[in-house]
Amino acid sequence: MVGSGAGNGGAPMTVRNYVLRALCEADRSALEPELHGIYLADGEVLFEPDYPADWVYFPDTAVLSVVTVMSDGRMVESDTVGYESVVGVLAALGSSISTNRTLVQIAGEASRVTASVLRRIANDSADFRRLLIRHSQANLAQAHQSVACNALHDVNQRLCRWLLMCQDRTAGDVVHLSQQYLATMVGVQRTTVNQALQRLALGGLISQGRRRIEILDRRQMEAQVCECYEAVRGNLERLIGTAPR
Image (cartoon, rainbow, N blue to C red; front, side, top):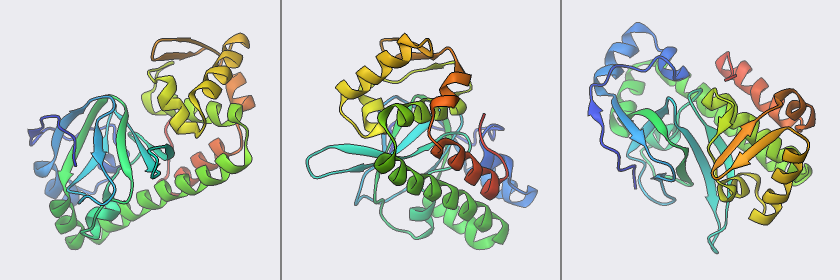
C-alpha cells in the first residue's frame, strides 16, 4: 500500500533531504531522473505490514512516522523520519515486504523512487549502499532508543522529546499534530497526553489549539526532556555526520 499523491516524474532533486544532498555526482546522475516529487497528505499510509514495499521515500518538508500495530489496533511509534533520512530502504534492498506501518505524521513534500530502481543503483554503487546503510542504522538506533524511553521515562519527558524532534524536522515553532497522534507517538492514552500538554501550557512552555502546538520556550523544554533526545541526535551525528535542528 503506497501513498496516493500524484508525482511529477523527473522532479528537480531536493536540496533539503540529507540523503540526496550527500550523493556523489555519479549516484546523483543515476538517481535524479528516477525521482518523483510528491505531496504527502496528513495521515496518508505509505507502508503496511506484510505488504510489498514498492517505493522508497525521501522526506523534504513532510515528517513520517513508523509505528508498530498491535492485534487490537493500538499503535506505538518507534521512529520519526524527516528530511534527515529516508524510509523503506531495508525492505527495498531485500526485495521484501514491510514489517511496520509508515504514515504521514505532518503533511509536506517528499521525493520517492521505486524500490527496484533504488536496488539497481545500490547494486551498482558501493558508495550509495554505504550511505543507505548508515541512514538505516540511524533509524534503527532511534527505534531502539524509543523502546528504552517508553519503558523507563515518564510521559512528560517523552512528550517533550517528541515535540522537540518534530520541531527539528519542520524547522518552525508550530507543530501541527493532533492529540491522538501525540498519544500514539508517546505510547499512552489520549487523556494522558491531554493532561501532559496542559501542564506544559501552564508552565509557559507551549500554547495549543486544534491540531496546533506552538513551542514557546524551547530552552525549558530541553531542560525537561529525557536523555533519549540527545542520544538520538548523537547517533545521527556519528552515523550521518549531522542532525536536524
